[in-house]
Length: 293
Image (cartoon, rainbow, N blue to C red; front, side, top):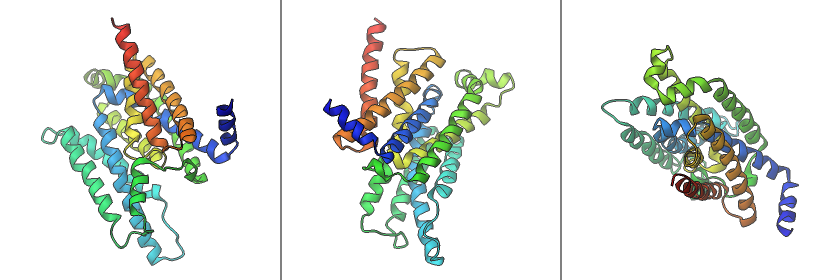
């Protein structure tokens, strides 16, 4: 009863409720394309873009500092104006470069994602960056998410809700094409489907998901929310639609449990959500092993 009373007390706070909404939406959107990424062996895109997003955020911060220096009446630029296009462009480059016969996917990740990390960290230490004496804290927050879930602003919540609705709508509308491209790209191409276009759409949607998740979960941890629910569902199910639905349900459940555990244990939200997903994967792996005996 004391546990429920504590949770009830927290949920009376509007900021906590908003954070829960964002967390569930982020987890749901991340899980929708996780199955496709795993089956198409595109997991490197999610992992690579999570690194690129950090570099994009650093570029955005430096740009904001320069704009403020030249135009004092402008406080800062909207981070998403720069972060979103840079991450989407990187998704296109990763996809194209990963399909290049001379530069395979793993090399593309090393070139673009690790390079973005290095450039981002370098920019954050330049004099033009708006230093607040806590560069290490800024880096940690961007990479692993905010340690306090109440740091979300109203604009963050609105942006996340709008983009999440667009991502879910795109997934529903393109479901049949994504299914075809996922399982037999050659057959889909033979029937008139432009597989390259849909591969590009997948990469762009993943980039958008990572951007909306970055401030909440952290750029390095969001790829785990994309992959783990899909892998867990695949331990016990084989049908594509069943795996997708199960993955979405598991993702929302793990996000909710991680959210409340983070509140009660006072732990970082992103890391807590990933830890719950790891436990879930272990449980479903055991279930799958018993089922297949």
